[in-house]
Amino acid sequence: MSKQSQTPKAAPAPSRSMLLDWLAIQRNRITILMILAGMAMVLPLVANNYVLEILTNAWFYVVLCLGLNIVVGYAGLLDLGYAAFFAVGAYTTGILTSEFGVNFWLTIPVAVVASMITGVIIGGPTLRLRSDYLAIVTLGFGEIVRICARNLEITGGASGLIGIERPSLFGLHLNQINHFYYVFLALAILACFISYRLQHSRLGRAWQYVREDEDAAEAMGIGRVAIKLYAYVIGAIFGGVAGCFFAAKMTAISPETFMFQQSVLILVGVVLGGMGKIPGVVIGAFALVLFPEVFRGIGSMRMLVFAVVMLVIILYRPEGIWPARRT
Amino acid sequence: MPLLHVQDLVLSFSGLKVIQGLNFSVAQGSIASLIGPNGAGKTSVFNCLTGFYRPDSGSIRFAERSILRKKPHTITRQGMARTFQNLRLFKSMTVEENVMSGLHCRTHAGALAAIFQTPGQRREEARVHRISQECLDFVGILDKKDWVAANLPYGDQRRVEWARALATKPKLLLLDEPAAGLNHNEKIELIELIRRIRDELDITILLIEHDMGLVMKVSENITVIDYGQKIAEGSADQIQNDPKVIEAYLGREDDEEA
Image (cartoon, rainbow over all chains, first blue to last red; front, side, top):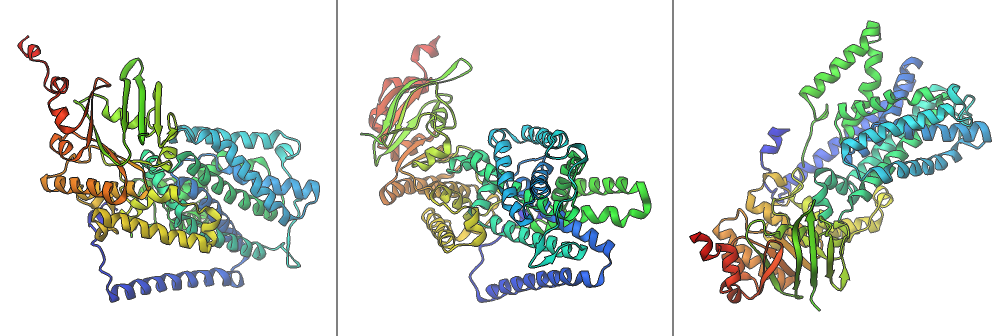
C-alpha cells in the first residue's frame, strides 16, 4: 500500500488510447463478474447437499459482512454488537409467522422498520462517542438484545422459536437447500449492488470524509452524527433482512445463535477480507465459512489453525486480503 | 449592518480566560485581518466563530442571525467556510474528491436516490463534479484533480484547502494562516488569489496571519488582539503607527530596561 501511495499519479492526459484501455478494463471486470455469477448459478446442478449447505451459509455471511462493512468499513465505526440487528430481523420474522401467522414476505418490511428503529435507538445517543467507547457500548447492546430474547416470553425464552413457516415464491414452496441457495445468492448479489451504489455516491463519500477526519468533515458542512447514524441504520437493515431469511431457512431460532461470538465472527470476515472493499469482504465472508469446513479433518485443532491464520493476516496484511487500490 | 458582528465574546478553558470580552465586526465585501502576538487567542476566535469551541458568553451574529453555540456543519451551511492552520485534507482521497466534500451541504441525494441512481441524483453528481472542477480551476490546480491529496506538494495542498472551502459557496471565508509554509512567489500568488476571491466571487474574507507584509498589503481593515482583547483596529497605516500595537509586539521600552 505504501509503495502505491508513494508514486504520484500523473494527471492523465485525455488521450484516446487511455480511454480504450479503461473501457477494456471495465469490460474485463464485467466479464469476470459474469463468469463468477454464472458459476454460482449452475453450482446447484453439480454440487451435493453438503456443499450447497456450506455455500448457502457463505452467501448468508456475505450479506451480514457487507452490512457490517457499511458501519465499520465505510463509516469507520467499530461495532461489536452487530448480531443484535441480525437477531431483530430473525425474531421479527419468527414471532410474526409462528405466533401471528403473518405471511413471510410481509414480515420483511416490518423487520426493516424494526432494525431501523433499533439502529436509531442504539446509534442516536452513542454515535457522539469516539470509536473505542462506541465499541464497548455496542458490545453491551448486543448482549442486551440476546438476554432480552432469552428471557421474554414472546421470543420463546432460552429454547427459542420453532416451527417458523417456510415461504413460497411464485407458487414454489421454498423447502429445499437448492431453493435457499438461490435465495441467499440473490440476497448477496443485491447486497453487493447496494453497497457498490452507496459507496460511489454522495453518502459514500461523506462516510469516507468522516472516517478520515471528523473535524475537517464538520468544517465542510457534513454533520458527523447524522452521517454516522445513516451508516448505522443502513447496516442494521442489511442485518435485519439477512435475519428474516435466516429464520425462514432454519425454521427455528434460539438466543444462542446471536452470541457475542457471532458479532465477532462477522467483524472478522470484514477485517480479514479488507474493510471497505466489496470483493474483499465477500472473500472474507467465504473464508470465514469455508475454512472450518475445509479443515474439518484436523478436528478440534481447526479453530486454533484458523486463529493463527487470522493473526498472520493481521500482522502482515493489516489492510486485509484484497489489495488496496487508489484510482 | 456588518456581515459578522462579534460582541463581548468570552471563552475560557478550565478557568483560564483565553478570550475576554472581544468586540469586532467584519463589513460585507471587505478583506479583514485578525492579528496579534503568539498566544493572543486568534485561532481560538476562529474556533468560536466556526462552532468548534463553545464560548462562555457573548454574541456572534452572522448575516443577521445568531450562530452562537451552533454546530460547525450548521455554520458552514449558513455560509461561513474555513481553512485550517495545519492542513486538514482528506489525505488518501483524490484532490477532486476533497473539493467535492464542500458540496455535501449544498446537495441532497440520499441512500435511495443513490441505489436507484435517479435522474435527479445523476444530475446532482454531474453538478458536484462541475462545480468542484470550477473551484480547482479558480485556484489553478485543475490539472491535478486526480492526484491523491497526500502526494501533492505543500503549496498545492494549501490550494486544495481553499478550493474545498470555496466549494461550500461561502459568504464569508475564514483563512487561518494561509501563508504559513509558502515561499515568496506563492505568497504573491496568494495575495492575488485573496483579492480575486473577493472581487470575482464576492466573498468576504477574514484572515489570521503572521506574515505582516502580507497582512498590510491585502487587508482593508485590521483588528489587533492581545490577551484575548481587542487593542486596536483600523487600516494598515493606522495599525502600524499605533503605540499599543507596537507595545504588544515589541514590548514596552522600560520593560527592556528592567
